Length: 117
Image (tube, rainbow, N blue to C red; front, side, top):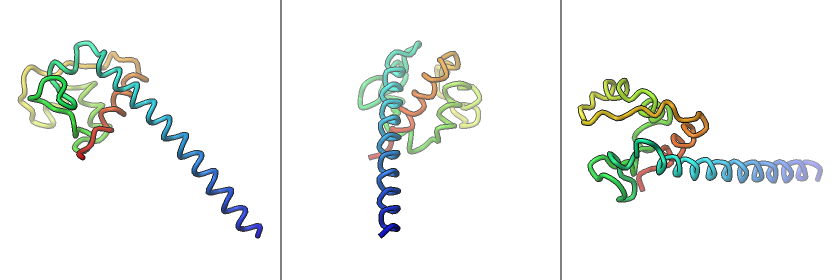
């Protein structure tokens, strides 16, 4: 009986932590969506998400093709990322290294959440 109580308590605690983490993840992703929309220069000048922005460089599934670390590199060291990817797209992507760390992390979380459906 005591063992069942321990398992039930552990399961409830795990569900609570999971729900809290999901809420935090959603809040971070929502913040990242706002950072994407407000970034200077505007991301949508060169990229599109859900059909909004320049269609030539869609980001709809970027989270399925790049890791969070790779996305962060594209944002903070686009010249290095382009060289590594052997990308010849022009104009060259600007750097977003001057974003506040929390905004950069939120933007990475948002872009990482964009997966193939």
